[in-house]
Every structure is written in structure tokens, then in C-alpha cells.
Amino acid sequence: MQDQKMERQLREDALAKDILEEARIQLMLKFRFLDLALWKMEILPVRAGFAYPTATDGRRVLLEPSRVIARFQESGDESIRDQLHLVLHCIFRQPFDKTYENREAWSLTCDIIVENAAMDICGQRFVSEGDAERKQVISELRMKAGTLAPRKLYRLLEAAVNAPEGADHLGIGRSQLNTWHALFERDDHVAWPAHADGTEAADGEPGDASTDEDGAQEQDIDRIHTDDLSDSEEQQMQSTQPSQEETSADSEESDDAQEDESAQDAAMADDASSSDEKSSEEEWEEVAKQVQMDLETFSSQFGDGAGELMDALALANRRRLSYTDFLRRFMVTSEDMKINMDEFDYIYYTYGLELYENMPLVEPLEYMDDKRIRDFVIVIDTSESVRETLVQRFVQHTFDILKSSEDFASTVNVHVIQSDSRVQSDTTITDLRDVDKLMKGFVVRGFGGTDFRPAFDHVEGLRKMGKLDDLKGIIYFTDGLGQFPEKAPDYDVAFVFLDEGELPPPAPPWAVRVLLNEEELG
Image 1 (cartoon, rainbow, N blue to C red):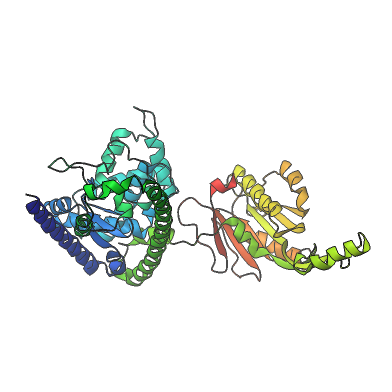
Image 2 (spheres, one colour):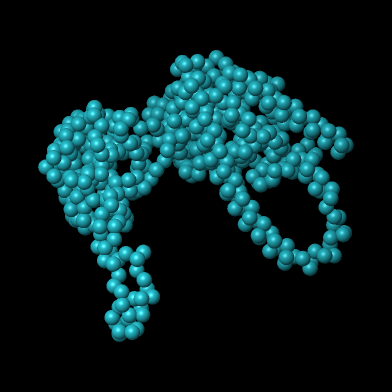
């Protein structure tokens, strides 16, 4: 009986793997830019009680053989779309993202974004019967959230998930959320590295363990994150284990040693898991960049049919740099009153104190070359489209960084310029200790149209008057909706946009775009 069951499982495993391989081939024939991503993960049959045919941990495609076979019998196109859905999750690195705390809202957000991109590139290929309804829901969500950018869509769904029982948020209640789960979900997220935190899935969520037809407990979910053994390898290890009678006599003597080894093994496993997770995410980042490059090459073959995927890739692949680190680009070399500890010799110094009684033999050098920010300009877009409270928080946040960092000199020459369609005010800061006084009386002026050129003309006038002799650059906080100078200046320019979870507005090629999270502003 056991042999027959094992033989049946082996046949199911082989058939299910063939189905996924065929899905990969069909996707590769239609979408050559996905070639590298489709074969990035090995296929591993498991029996873990998944709610859907497949799952992934970023390194492997974990499939439930019986569910994969049933899905293929239902529709070959649905099986192909399932595989595309799972691969797009990894390309966007969603399984590794631990930013969003509400698991249900984030999982649904990921599924909606992935299905939107999949429908866009598939067009009339691999059509699913639920596509028409999905497009209708996506249109509704665009109206409610303003965009399908991950952060905005997540906030909308999180508010709906957290709404009191029987209530809704913007017309989105529990019943509608459940319908959307069924409509957009295609794989199980329980094996995502971001979810491998030891917490149990909520009642009714995918990933609950189940029992097989003989009443035996299915393979535990946690093993999927740590165990790479196939069923046959596991059985071989079990067959080589000594019997309970042979080991019982020695068990009491080795308990302490085993506990110590178990603790060490657990710590090593945690370190290895964290390293593997980081490595997998970095590997998928490289794959995503290659997919983006290939897609741009083949985009003429798709017309407008790959726009959603290209936008999602551009958002996922954007380079991230903290605002604090970016400010260090404005450092300049200067001589500063400071003990040069690199050239300070303690031996001669203390010897002189002992020999001559409080008379050091060698005095420390009082000057050293240091990199400090001195001359630069902060321009605030005070047009009508920019919120006043946001402007004040940005200015406060910027000066907080300056005051707290050793990379900024206390004596500075910082011009804070407010400008909409013309320059409204120019406040000069010469000492960072005066910042608090400035912020107490800081008033936002303007709220007209947006034109960046007057601010640049004003800065150029200051340079000609000798008020900015060593200008390193300009930081321009704006929403990006205005006219830029046609000619590139001879200093660095950074346009700082508020990160709304979507691509920032366009900027001239000579300027740097920096995204700042509203949460960073405090």
C-alpha cells in the first residue's frame, strides 16, 4: 500500500513538473525578455497544504502536484498565467519586502499589481476568464487611490482591512476584499522570505496546513524555508537512522551536548537564512535589471502593451539613496579648527607631562583639512500645488541633518530661497545655531504658478556679487511641475520630490532626482 502511494506521488511529481516546464516554454516563446527570469528557480514538488497550486521562496518554485495537475486540466492558459504571476512577484522583489506590516493588505496589493502587468503584456494571449472583471476592479482602484503605485494602493487596502467589522473604507468592505482575494490571487505567499518570521497565518488565509487522505499531517510549512531535501533524499536519511532501541541507552548522557549543538545549529541556520535571503533578493535585482533592459529593446514589438510592466520595473529598479547621504555630496575641503588626532602622538605628549610636570613635550596640531559643507542653496517651491506644512517639515528636516552631522561646518553660508513663478524671499544662514530661531518665524510665501528659472537666475546674480564664492550646489524641493532652465549650470543640482510610491516627475538630464519619504520628515 505504501509502495503504491509512493509510486503515485512520484508520477504526480513528474507530471506536475512537466506542466510547469511547458508553461515556462510557452511564456518564453511569447516574451523573450523573461527568458532569464523563467528558469531562475528550480522546481520542487511539496505536499504542504498550499491553498494554491504553487508558491515560491525566491529560490524555488514550490508546487503542489495534485493542484498543479487539476489546474492544467481546468485550463492550460490559467496554468501559464499562474507561472507568469509567480515570476513577476520575484521580478518586482515583492517576496522580500518587509516594509509593509499588514500582511493581508500587502499581499493583495502585490497580486493586483502583478495581475495588472500580466494582463497588459498578455493582451489576447493566455486570456483568463476573470480578466474583464479584474480590469474593472483595477479601474475602480485607480479612481480611489489615484494610482496603482504600491504605497498608495497599500494604504487604501490597509484602511479597508483595518475598518471595524461591518464598516468599510471608501466603499471597500470585507465582502469586497474577499472577492478581490479570490479574483487576483494565483499563488500562495506563505513561503515568502518576508513572511518567514515564525508567525502563524490568520484563520482562513492561504497556507494553513492540512491532512492527507490517510489522516497524516502534511509537510510542515516551516520546513520549506530551511529544508532543501527532496522526498527521496529524506527517506534515504530516515532509513539510515538507528532504531529507538539502539539509541535510548545513550540519550540521557548526551542531552546537554545535544542542546548546545541544537542552539549553535539554530543560530547558524538563522545566519544562513538571512544571508540566503539577501543573496536571493540581490540576484533577483540583477535579473529585473536585465529584464528591463531587454524589454526596452523589444518594446517596439509590443507597442503600448508593456507599459504597465515597464513602469513597475522602473519603480522597482530605481536606485535608492538616503537624503542624509545625498547631502554629503555637497562637501568641500576646508581648513578647520580641530585637533588632528591622526597626527597626535600620545607617547611624546604624556612623556612631556611626566618629565616637565604638566608641560607637554609636543603640542597637538590645531588645524586639519576637513570636508565640510559651507556654501549651498536650498530652494523651496512654494507654488499652489505644494503643501505649506510639507515645506516647513522639509526645511526643518534638512537643517536637523546639517546640525547633527559632523560633515557640516557650524559656520556656513546657506541661502534658503522661496520661489513660485518668481523669487519670494531669500534668507541667509551663517551659523547653524541660528536655525531654531529661523524656524520659529518661518513663513511660507508664494502659492502662485511654478517656474524654476527665476530661482536659478537669482542664484547666478548672487554668485556675480560674490555672495556665493564656492557654491557646491542647489537642492530644489518641488513637485516637479514647472519650467526648467534650458542650460545646465556649472554646479550640482538636485530636485527633491516627495516619494509617493511612484515614478517621480521628469527632470533635465543634468539634474539629479532624489525621492524623500514623508515618514522621514517626522
